[in-house]
Length: 106
Image (cartoon, rainbow, N blue to C red):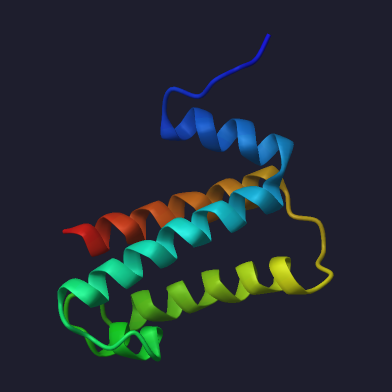
């Protein structure tokens, strides 16, 4: 019988255990969409997104650096041969991405 997630934590638990790489790719896509929306609604440039976020007082350098780290991991997974990712690492990634999405949405 199929198991369906009814919450963020259930979703992350299911996908992280089944395909941790897919969870990271999924949550980068969600975060990237939130970043684009944040920049568009404020009339900020979409080029050099992390630099723009770093100079934005609502986001700041530290958050922009953490977003850069998430992007770099996503890019490594999408474009290079990488080491295995544990379900816990993937779940932590998804939680960080969700935290940043909420930050950008407020």
